[in-house]
Image (tube, rainbow, N blue to C red; front, top):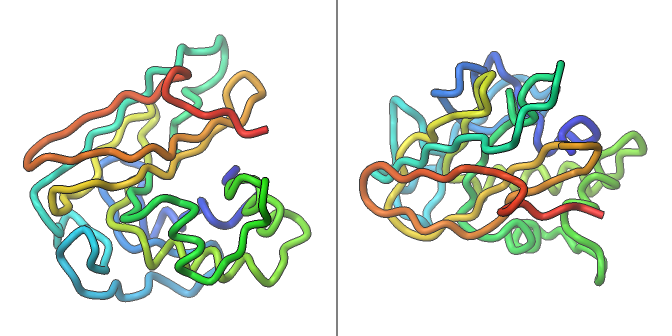
Length: 193
């Protein structure tokens, strides 16, 4: 999805390095630089957690459990892992984005931000930035640890292609104080049709 939509593409040199261990404010491709994140420290508050300014002590380590495909890199290598404060659909709605009935938010975003970019694309980017709590770009093995946030319920926003199928992980995740972990695989992914 990120290859056809500016939503999931983060400017690596200014936001999420590809080392899999750092994060900062989300920035849309082509923007002049990272925006100053709003302040706030709770799940319902604003701001994006960074290693230099974590918003809490609950960290999330994400690993790829997708089986390797011969001759190709891990399907999650270099992918942005974003932790939202609300579900993806709700984050978009709070940002004033109306997803047509019967259409998945991911499909709508792919259409809005794809080659025939619509005016809704910027609203989508702004909605995701406003709702993001933490983010990291996966390393070459598909692993990464998101900077700390306040304990609570968050929502994953992760997508990739695997076996010529678009997969997303958007489930709610309960983070407890301290380290938390999840392995992404075909069993906990949702195919995008």
